[in-house]
Length: 102
Image (cartoon, rainbow, N blue to C red):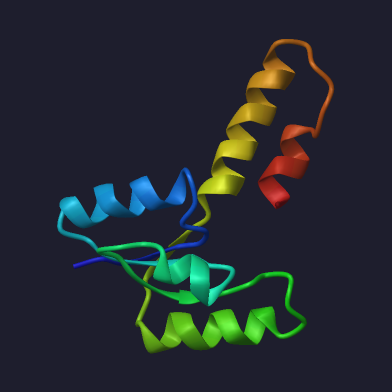
């Protein structure tokens, strides 16, 4: 069974995590605050505020504790997709080179 962490269980991440769980993946989610995490029913997770000064160590510890194999950040995926669409339509934005580095 694949163990997945969805970073940010908001409007995009929460339904994604639920869909992955429905397909028999073991999925945990993150929220920036304990209150936000408590507001989600039926999903397990942990608090990870990526703005915190110790965010990298905190996130690494949780990913190790939960034995996570795959990390998904739905916001960055949606952002990258939107930026690529914008560039194809002649809009200005980040180059594909920058998107791949993000």
